[in-house]
Amino acid sequence: MLNKKTFLTIREVNLYIKNLLDGDSLLSHLWIKGEISNLKAHSSGHYYFTLKDASGILKCVMFKSRSQKLKFKPEHGLQVLAAGYISLYERDGQYQLYVEDMIPFGAGALNIAYEQLKERLNKEGLFAQDKKRKIPYLPNYVGIVTSLTSAALKDMISIIKRRSPQTKIIIAPAQVQGEEGVKSICFALDRLYRQPVDVIIIGRGGGSLEELWCFNEENVVRKVSSSPVPIISAVGHETDYTLSDFAADLRAATPSMAAELVVPLRDELRRKTSQYQERVINAVMKIFGQERQRVSYLANRHVLREPLRLLSLFQQEVDNLNHKLINQYRQKLKDEKANICLAANKLDALSPLKTINRGYSISYRLSGEIIKTIEQVQINEEVKVSVSNGQLSCIVKGKRGETI
Image (cartoon, rainbow, N blue to C red; front, side, top):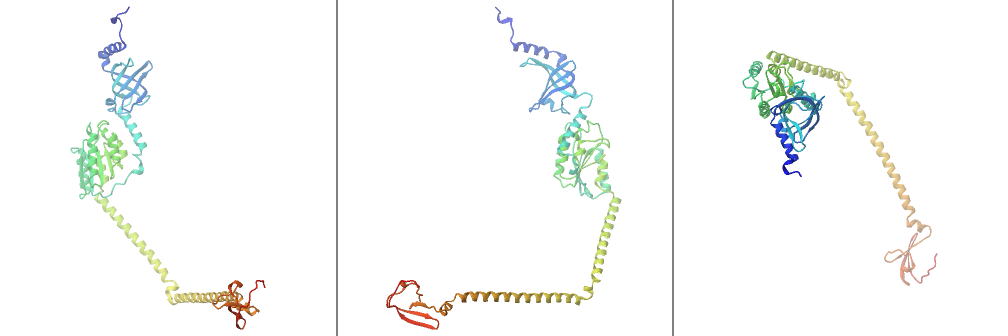
């Protein structure tokens, strides 16, 4: 008979093994290389997956507090280096790697994150060419987002003031790298979006991919894309391309070039003014020439040279219309007379006088009522009888009901 101390519960075994794993210094922090498989991104933000190689698999979990700091999005089949610690998940009795950090193997995490975000935002239409707006030629106010102490800011101010002294500059300083860079840039853009600027330059000088990364962050790219006024992205050097460049209305290779694109040189302005003046003069002269030809054409027409001829044409037209109107009136009158005669003939045919002239008579009571039946009169009642040439006064002596 086994006593209580001769066996362990499953929980006790799992807890014992967990304590062994947790107490192993080698397993408390290690890097493991493998291929991501069976990846499940939970709605909570946690990642559940396995790492595999030719020799086996290892279950892994990465909680939201860690996964949200990744610079790339984990994908099936991606080779990675995962850092973390090995521990036991007591409920299942299985050990797994609790991932605290992860980077792609063989390619930079930032490069992968860059390409993944670029593809996703491009599908959303943030980089569409038909959304690009023209930069105003002579802006009254230029907004600038960059570091307040940067050489890029000094260069832009110098170029704008030299080229267009009347242009006003509104500066919204921002941190352009580091952990606070994204928040600072978005805040600076929001400030300028509330100002009466005509165009905005956002940029900084050159640097490494990590130093320029703020301009690849999704929040900054979306903020640039939502600008209410045209915006120029000028980040780094000519070979540096950020996602903000694609979202902006125009990309400049450097901040200095952005300033040159915003305001024209005085000589260029004079040249363009001269071109516009020449175009206006040519347009006016063309209109004058066309009108001169039109006036000449009208002046050479016989009608204008001999106005009485035009009057004669109108008089002839009036006579024709008058003649046509009289003829139509006469025909209408003739038709109406014929209709009246026809109606009179019909009425005459139905006249009682016509009936009397054929040998018939009409009898009336003294009240004027026409006698149609014998029931209408009484014996000895006086009645009148109309004949063709007069009336007879008669006394009713009797009534018979025979039909005539």
